[in-house]
Image 1 (cartoon, rainbow, N blue to C red):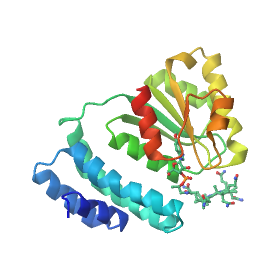
Image 2: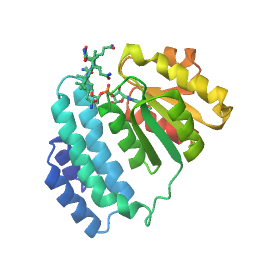
Image 3: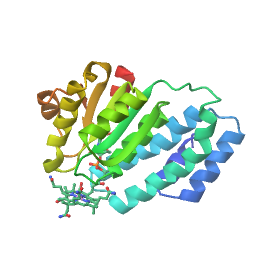
Image 4: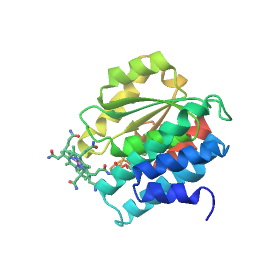
Length: 209
Ligand code: B1M
């Protein structure tokens, strides 16, 4: 078994304490924090994402896997700053106004964070004005917007328009995601990118940040 396979499997199986224990063992053995995240924690969550997509795992299991990943991140994250990964850029992420779904957004945020970016998570139900304020305050490279309801997709367009009205649209790349969102929709409303999942979102952040 590869040295990171055990922790990845523990994430997939949702073994919160075991993930924390193995993360600590890997840290004590001198493994790089970024490798523990990428090869272990995120690799595990990638499998969870695929299984969820294929109806082989369901929401409660996804949540417990995400909790396990957090338990590992709690051990490893403090070491990131002092180790091999300088923050590669900043990403502001949030679920748009009227929408309370945050499980997918949280997964995406964790994966981007796992790739070494600073993530400012605004939470859910964020208005266009709140998004504009966050961009002014944090000056991110990328803003990630999530929507899970067809009825809240227009709030994504409103956010982009508000960035334009505030004359800061050119200073930031906007990426979109969420089950009802598509690349065509993202193109139509003038976003810079669309990601169906956390790994594509991370690739887009790497491209833009
Ligand atoms: Co709601 N809900 N929900 N819900 N919910 C859906 C989305 C729905 C499809 C269920 C259904 O009817 N089949 C439906 C939407 C229909 C539609 O508009 N097309 C729906 C509805 C109707 C509602 C309510 C209106 C129900 C009601 O009250 N009558 C209500 C709305 C509340 C509100 O938001 N104002 C509601 C409420 C809720 C709960 C609160 C109970 C709960 C949310 C809990 C929470 O998030 N904290 C909930 C849940 C859990 C779901 C389902 C079952 C699961 C969503 C989820 O977490 N998936 C969902 C049905 C389903 O999807 N099977 C449903 C797991 C997650 C890992 O996947 O979020 O798709 P997902 O995220 C993926 C990708 O989409 C992508 O990457 C993630 C990881 O792969 N992604 C991004 C997401 N954001 C991204 C951002 C990016 C990039 C990628 O870049 C920035």
